[in-house]
Image (cartoon, rainbow, N blue to C red):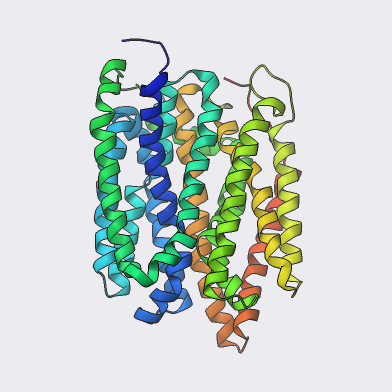
Length: 418
């Protein structure tokens, strides 16, 4: 076994294989925001149906997070992600063939299961095969890859819809998932063999007490609220309901909405690139002084909440720009997950990541479905469509304000860095 970090072509091969999986994962997460009108028109879905359908991805994705941490340690990132992507390909095929809500929900859920390892497997692989000082840079590049997938799910998908339809888009995605699975399994086998990567033994208490220790930690709960509520709500808006806001509240056409979503994801991409440059230089890390992560996160949260207040109470056409500003503030919340990993023993780092992911995707699942239910409820009491959407978004903002004050007022402190 060699302890030298990967470099050159081998390193590029590893990154590209894992980045391709995460790109497809994020594209599938976001695509319903663009194809929603076509789904509603063809299958006569209600807002609640649409929210439930889209949230199936997050429900299935989140349900896999706890066992995923164990599988990555036991079987390694290459085999785990390659196998799960086959499940995602099956889900895409079922979605493409379905003519009922049940079939679509099943396909969407299988996609969520199949792409559940795409980011965590890459973090595991990079931790095993790359030098420690490369970790934050690689994490930032993965976020860029994921946001590129979200970009592909906006204007490019909207352009392709008239040509191949939403079913054709999912058949194409099915093929891409199969290719990526094959690349991970076959192209990275020589890498894993050369590294002689052993199954990583868990922390002595990890099997029985690892997750219990994590969820019982006051500091994890303080930061975990952000994943459950703030990040969960943002992901739900970004991947589904932002498109409805653009069309029904701001009066945009479907093409204009897709272009705006493209801009939103482009701002996220640029924000991640900027954060990848800024954070290693100015944010505190083990052995290095700097801005504390909670302080940086508080600034980002303040900006997010203020921009949402302006969005709710302004009728002006230019308010779509506030979505871009909110996305820019949101990027700093991505510091939370890697920061939390540093506050626990290395043996539990994978489980900390998957535990936080679980909270975020529970929040996204509940929010995507809940917004649809709220819209339908407001309709039932006589509210106009635009007012119903504003009302549901106001409920989301109220939850965020509550969590903001809980986070700022908490006295829980991080453990010493490990």
